[in-house]
Length: 331
Image (cartoon, rainbow, N blue to C red):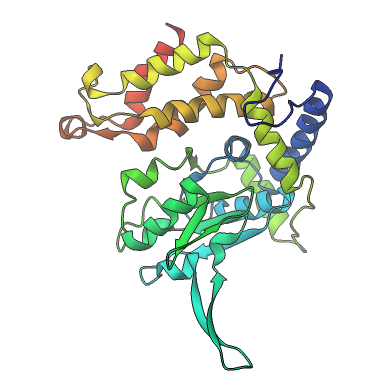
């Protein structure tokens, strides 16, 4: 059952509206999957990220449809989509915008703010780890506060606002690893792998023929905002909340996780609960289950923890740590 009163001051969404909106999101899901072939799990995680109101880091080898995914998401969800190719010489003003001095017809001068590409509803930050730390940090305020400050003036970003950043895991020369504070701003890390043989054959035939236009919009920005509000109204069973806390707290060194230099913080728990609610909505349910949390453990935790030197020397990986704490969900 939905909450009778919403915490954000808006009236609660009725069950009929819930069903109608869930059906439209299901249509959008199908349209995206038809265009991003063989990556259903990735499409679902990207949709869950948007429904939860967060940002995602897309990690995958070149040519695995990261750019195609973002463009398709923007088209189907009806969002104003922008793309920035991150390079070592990219400056913060190239992303945020800048104030320019203009001279009017009467000779008077004044500054006018020219907004940068960050002022889209869906920003693709392509190869974000190629930019300098100074430029990377320019996105921190935008991602967390949904505003930017230029020359002492605050400028609010559009609603909804999402960043999908890509990162190439194999090209490390000339890259700047993302700082932990910025990694923590990403709701999920979405790993993109190779497609199956059947999917790759379908991709080959679908993309080497005639035109390959983007699909039509199925939803609009207002629909997405309403869905995000609805997701936050879904009830959180006490058992799900307790399971999330058990797993997140078990990743911390002071709780006995000696193979980690540091573990997941409170944002990891927030990501798991919001993500579980969004996944339940995507699957047509009104209550998140333990299985929703289990499906999101790696995307929510992998980028929020760091192995100790001893663990790295022993050949352990972050996935090994997650596998070790996963059974605590059912404790």
